[in-house]
Length: 369
Ligand SMILES: *Cc1c(COP(=O)(O)O)cnc(C)c1O
Image (cartoon, rainbow, N blue to C red; front, side, top):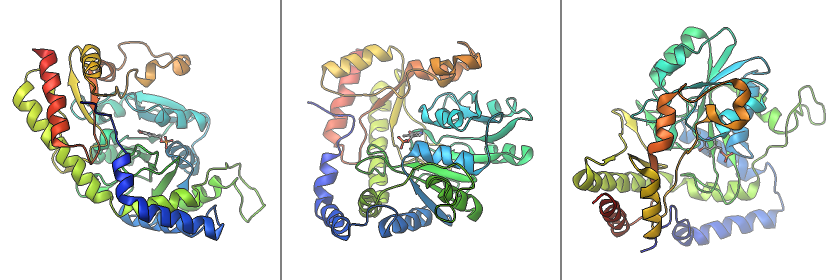
């Protein structure tokens, strides 16, 4: 059996008619940039996130970068980020001219450890970027307490977590802003690059809107240096169709996750550590990530048997060559480093079948026998 990490072809077949109709409408209207589809998507995603404003941008990475600049973060400032995340989280901080300061993670959730944050705060610290990794929100209560105490912005990296909840709240409700990516593989994926900032702050929304269009306000007058970072109408039209299905797809992911956990705990309880959904959190399983010993050998064995898996992420950010000037060394953030050696993400998408999951688990079992 051949099982891909992610299969988007089945989903397209079910949406084909609606998507093609929506795209045809955009092409016939010949309105391609910042038109009615983007406006509709901004309103719908803000409403979905239960906040007031959405600002469409070109990618999740730009959503982070523009959020930081909208908050006034600049050279000389420090921003605390987890060391175990996708590069863009820290890349955006450096792009804004500020310094990323790396915190360690909680080994159970893989999310930033609030205990690790507090000791990193200096008088230069301006913000914290919690990442809701794999689709589960970070401990936003503890993070909010720290941020309030030290007057820091929280910018949520919700690229993997649209629809996730923490004590009934969605990304964007707690932080100053939350940043979504609509990269094709995300839970709500476009057919190209796209992203969005959501926020309850009218001021941050307005600054973000200005920054995404060359800092132009009024048009052709520039008080700040901005970017060309817009979400285009074609992507917005596709996303408007797909957003209607997001809750159903997230539920299907959760069902698949529960089945993996049931099979793995029954058959391989002593070998495989399965993901934990913390109480009062709604996990949307962007990834289903297990922890194992002999991870690389297991990955090779699964590959030889037709099962694709991914390592998110093989190298922690504090040890990335591009950040070598920051002076971190191996051993500084032990939980992040350990996760890089043990984490393995199994195939996960809404349409993944029980038979496919049973095959994957049977092969993992075979490896450890
Ligand atoms: C995907 C992702 C991003 C970046 O999003 P792009 O749209 O690819 O720029 C940022 N942070 C995390 C955690 C992500 O998974």
